[in-house]
Image (cartoon, rainbow, N blue to C red):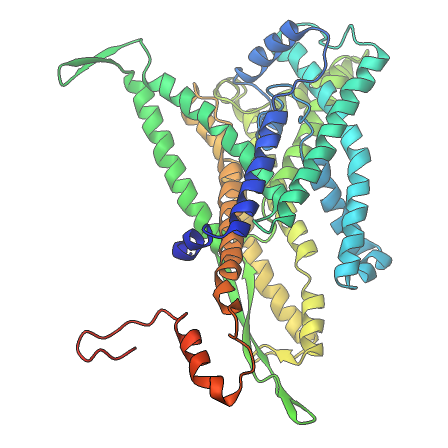
Length: 503
């Protein structure tokens, strides 16, 4: 990473305008994350939020949604749905592109086809935003009744109030999608990823404050260098363990995110007329974790279904259905120190299922995003080949073998990262840790991607000295010497201390 070029580019007006525009859009998002959903009783809303997110038994789905929405769920903001509908629509369109031949043909049409697919994704986002808005309200209401210990927060809401709430959440989600695309147009990273990252970062101060309050509690007093300090020994040790764990996990995530197998691709020489093409060597990078955090999103969504079904069956009239509902609720309850100490072996069903789902979805989504057959066909058409491997089917098998081996290790690593907060709850039962390996993976990957985009833009901006007059102008013979002087005056030559000659 060339920080000198990035700093130098800040002196250009265009670069400053782009960065300030992105920061302004992100500020708008943070302001909107604190606009509450129109509800009849704000005092009841405050009580619900306090009881819900201070509890150690808060469902992981709610904590995950709250992180991705930038705390909008904790504030019961109009941004509750967040970018979830758009992400789901993008995933659905990727799957449909592989299943429907017309969409696959449209994707191969280049920029025009990609624009059409993006338009279809935006259209699909709207109905998904409506469904997710209704589901979010029902999910918060049901969880608040069980954990918050209060009644129905929407009991006095009329049909028009429901329409207003759903419309506000849907509009917030669509507006957030538009803000993300505006950021992408500024060429300073991916807008959708940046919005999610800012949402995660906004939750870091509250997490740090919680650990600080635990360490510097007033339960015990220590004398340090003659000064009395309120310091809890157990809280300080827990805080130190969390800090060390965060550093280790961040280092591991950086290594896993950057890990890739680089396959050497050779291109045969081709002669067309008087020109020779090819004869070069390039590299095809295959990432260790090609699927990103999508498998974890899938796994969390699937794990919320058994618990929800169990809650519905618990109120059934049949005793057998009630028994099944109680078992589902017990098996798929959010893991905590209490559940591990009271439920015995049943408490490990949720973590084991979570790990298995992440493992399976990693293979599934990698097969969708990395098409070995298509890559092998494109290499064959362009005259490219892997040394020692025949073009066509043999290249496809070779790429599939490499990807499967990489995905095996990547799926194991991703599953362990997903289990990070659950393991932390076992060793630190008094800490409500919502940010784990998943959030660190998002932060690291998006930060590196954004820095690369900023550096690329900075390189483009700092090359503007070549646009000086007469730099590429075809000169007359008598203007050669003067033009050379103007050109070489732009170059950063240094003089030698011994002979005074230019280097």
